Length: 194
Image 1 (cartoon, rainbow, N blue to C red):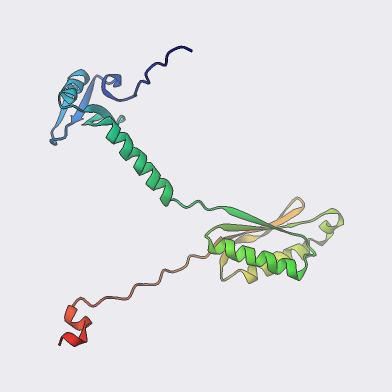
Image 2 (cartoon, rainbow, N blue to C red; image 1 turned 90 degrees about the vertical axis):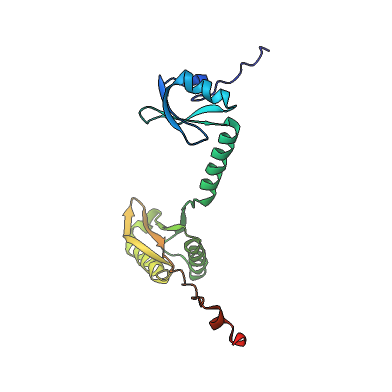
């Protein structure tokens, strides 16, 4: 096996391709220097020169520890990923002659999906000669919309596409209850101190 070549870091130290950079040093000084001079000055401080804003004119480079910078970037990305909420579209399928028990079962699922913050797509499938009774499917979807109105809002009217009629529901925005106001005066909060 051939020996591994060391990985070249982009936008760090000698790999910076710009002629000059706006160098920011730990003491707060900012200077526009030729790249090689800025790299030498960072190395004298025992730090690396890292381009933090490559699109600026000239590019902004900061003198800092490369390992620490990588760690902080990874931590920021992890936090951003943790805070985001992905909204999914959950699909429930019906037939025009769906029984009441099955309807109730799927209604409970739809309520749970909407409470979790996901969107719900209700689809009525028509097979064979059932396509002649499109009105039954639309009635079923409108009944479903009526039963879900306190949990979700309907996006448009039921639409027929091919052999399927569908409608989409979005979760209702729930108002966050206001926190009770705390008294600012400590003597007003505790009546025994008077």
